[in-house]
Image (cartoon, rainbow, N blue to C red; front, side, top):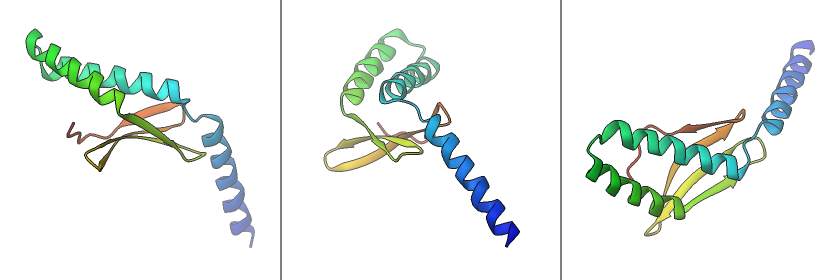
Length: 102
């Protein structure tokens, strides 16, 4: 019984910390743009290709939406009826999903 109570208390504390440290929508969007820009620069050092990628990123970010789930938020893009999840925000940090088919 003590173990169950301890587990519930630990989970409640963890949920409280996650709730307090969830990134705002503005912060989430800014972090995703920054990380996508870094990824573009790293993968495409050619300036012409990078310019095309930046234009595609701006179009992608115009379709970017964030779903809030109280203790975390998930960023996704819906294109042609297909939803692709690209980021998870929690603990005041945004994590990009490695496999992006934008």
